[in-house]
Length: 127
Image 1 (cartoon, rainbow, N blue to C red):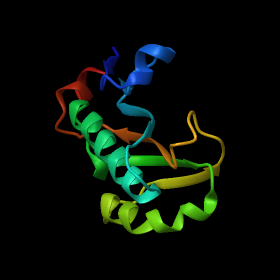
Image 2: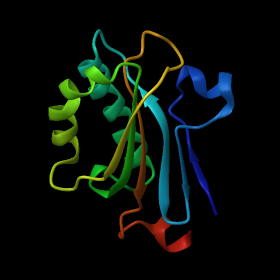
Image 3: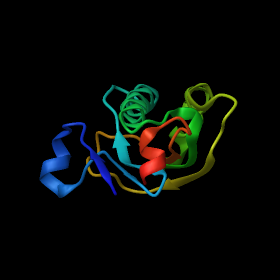
Image 4: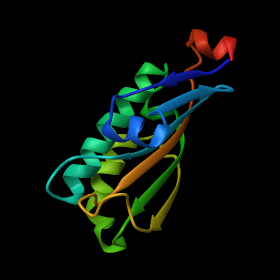
């Protein structure tokens, strides 16, 4: 059994994907960009979107096991570190940072995560 979660983002229909898929006890959250004037604001906004998707899937930031950060300029990664450290707190996931082009030059960071379902989730017992 799978559950698909949409956030209604502009690219979901254009490209043909959903924000997250729950399958096999995991939540796979698609690469997520955020709005804002700089990389830190975009990072915060992307994490808020990811957090919402995880909550809809019966998970949370503490259950993220893997994260991939994609940035067009690796020098912009360090300013995000305090935001990321705050987001994951005492439960840091395995992480990878990739320097690459993003779908639009206005985006400075894209974040993709994989989380496990919370053990109290009914979906966890069905999937």
